[in-house]
Amino acid sequence: MAKRKKFGEVLVDEGVLDEVTLQKALKKQAGTGKRLGQILEEENVISERDIALVLARQFGLKTVKNIAAHNFPEQILDLVDSEKALQKLIFPLRVEEKTLYLAMVNPLDMETLDTLSFGTGLRIVPYLTTPNEIHSAINKHYLKSMQAPEQGKWWRIMVVDNQLQSLSAAVSVLTKEGFEVIQCNNCIEALPAAVNAHPHLIITEINMPKMSGTDLYRSLKKNPHTSEIPVIATSSRATAREEAELLDMGFVDFIPKPVNGLRLCARSKKSLKLVYDDLSAPPTKKI
Image 1 (cartoon, one colour):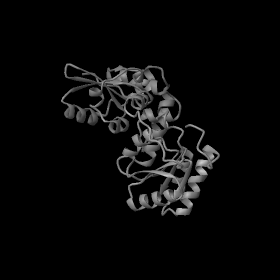
Image 2 (tube, one colour):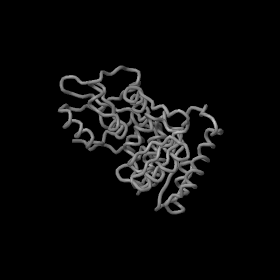
Image 3 (tube, helix red, strand yellow):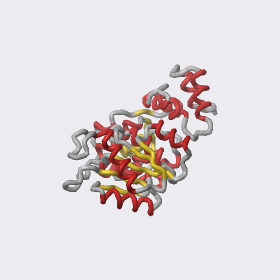
Image 4 (cartoon, one colour):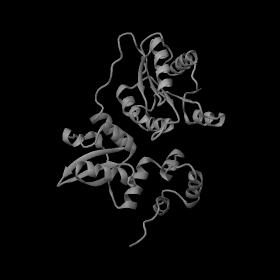
């Protein structure tokens, strides 16, 4: 049996990038825990579609696009809940002869395939696509409702923190300041909540298990429906260098813990003002 070529080798064979660029990307990837495709995408060397096409060739799979344009019956959508779909970037396409055809981004995610097969009793056939395709399909077919703010509460802030004392303190002080506050105690539940409620600002702890604050940030930025939401990072363990890296990544601000209530409100208003200009009236800018 022929040995399957590595992702980078296929990229070079297909002429998507040259050997020098590949070696630079591999060097940058070392020790980060990131996939090579993610590194190349962050460097704007290749696009999401390039990655999907190359992976499809590498694994002998088909690709799918324009998912959001199609209609899907509820019994198909019910096979995968929206939280799992957003977290794993998967979307159920159809069922035929005890086989579930599934759009996905990462063909190496065998754990998700095995778990879904066990839970549904169906054989899973993956179709490769891009994160943007998955996000668009989820936004249209799963997350149809939008939570409206209460009368007079124009500004919605989402606070994400697995430290309940910190979460409660932040929610309390922001609520007293007049904000509508959405609270989540982990990033996995925060991702679909952000798409559904579309807060004007997100404040997230960075160091959380399973899905970190930086993972949440990257997922939000890849989704066109949440990519413009400003995000503030908080942490009690970040060094000055790590703080600088978070700001360079695109976080609108960083607040060290323990968070002072006055500082939290002031920084939140500053971040909102940077994006929306006038805080004295309902937001007119849609992001």
